[in-house]
Length: 339
Image (cartoon, rainbow, N blue to C red):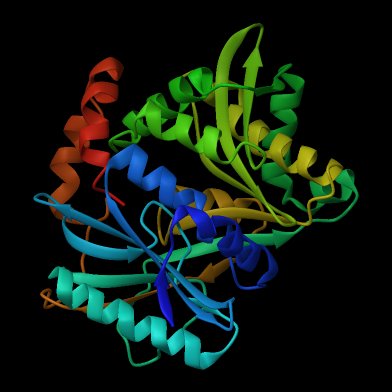
């Protein structure tokens, strides 16, 4: 039987996520609250139940935007998603229902953000890869595993006297993050979104901030799930480049994670051919393809909403010139539909 998740079954859903090897942090029920309360989008958290036990899940978010189209996605604002199940029959039931729901809602397309290929005959985008690596239990061995040139960047940050601290609120993080994102020509998310992440994922969301002589250098919001750490949102101020603030910051996340027994460092999604792709390669991480599969409804071709699309270049160039305060004010209005 296919059901829609409500608050009374959050724990049952999360127990399934925590115990299934293919489930990710982004399958947790908390994202339903985050997406609905931060952005106002409708979500459909579907699951199959047999004899009182969940056998498959599929979190979906519906974003209808005049600028960026109409889509049903698993999962918006997340790098991973898609159907997770304990048997093929349950998974196929959810896949069929998701396609039906996409038709009923009249969306342009249904997008399933899988880490592995699930439906070979379905079109997919090969735009993204992810970077994941198993960590050694010895901190120094992880340092030595980083290629020499990148290791030198980290040591430069250490020599500059950079220090890292864990922040209990998003204030310094938001300043560093929004400045960095503005400089890339991308609309910033609202502060409310990050406050919501910190509130809902209290025990799994951590903010590490780097400073020098009391000055903000860089900051990153990371998620902890099972035996993994995912540094997910981050950025640096103008001061970061001179002292390798971002390099030091990610090393500090890795170092602290190892000391806390974390086994996997998930560097997250990057677009092939971008600066972040090259940055992660320099750390010795190897790219793994992501299979974002599509069921086209009203759309006749796969969507191309990404900064590499030439039609967005003028917008990006103009956005980089915005005063930071203006980008923080206008950005959330645009970014809420860029799931």
